Length: 421
Image 1 (spheres, rainbow, N blue to C red):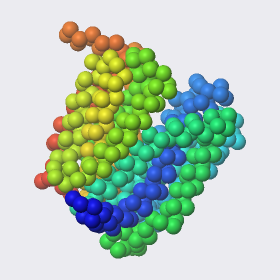
Image 2 (image 1 turned 180 degrees about the horizontal axis):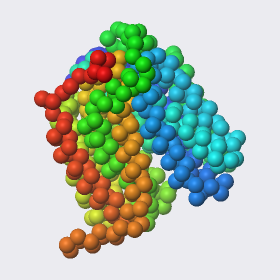
Image 3 (image 1 turned 90 degrees about the vertical axis):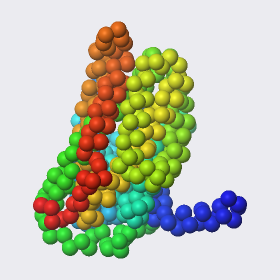
Image 4 (image 1 turned 120 degrees about the horizontal axis):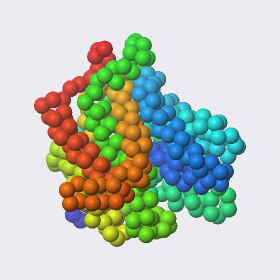
């Protein structure tokens, strides 16, 4: 391919995904804001105020509020429109991030975390809805890959932005201001560049919705109970690793906090690049097969965690496991969007998100317990308890693969509309 052909290909690609790119800019700012807030700002600030013993409750309040809010936020997006709900969620996030700097009461902080959860639920759900509606069905996996990319941007750059801002100002509060500004930037970007109308040409709020709010939300919750189960098992499996993977790197591999941060950044950036290819691969394999392959890769790699002895081993396995995630996740989200009429798409995606959130909450709770208390003794296999969450995660992903192969099939596709009461 010569330079002229390359330029033509880039122009055509941008034209096809122009609206996806615009939504992606706003989503990147939002996910970076949550990366700064959750991964960088809160932990050292909580320690500084002497609230270390409450840190689990602080994060639990956020996760529970996020889980319970996803279905309502998605339903509201269906009823009043994607753009106003997206702007509202971002403004709530900006306000709650700022409140961290003026509140010194732990119980009020828990209320702020509820606001954080409502905001993140809205941003997560509405970003998926908005991106799914910027392209026709055949390009939807690529759009969902772009969503995954924005999430990885926040994951990889959040700690750096937050840590740098705190260091240069010598204040633990600065990163909260940075997060608040990023959410305000999100609101501005959404207002000015996120399309008002859906790909089909109908306005998001012109669906002629006549059903009561709770009835419409119930449609989303009952539409795909099997998909909600799969989502819960997947995110339960990954959720077990959230509280322990950094401890594992430090305690089993002798890594410093800075060294762990240096390891995470290139892995996340590699996965961000891999995400760009995931949509094209799904076009070759098909969305259903991409879900199988993604879960299968992650499950198989997780079984090799007990042989990790060096930091680079962890980096390689994390890259493989993450590759499974970025192959399967966009195809999964595209399938859900494909099977939902646009007037209930937010409700359905929010319901699936509820399953994911429930899985994460249970996984986080169990992962820490297994890491400390439950060693593995099976036949001649004897492993320290630090490895147990990874083995449990591998088993959970294996179960999930069988569930996916049973429930997610080309010949079992459904389509949900407002008539499905």
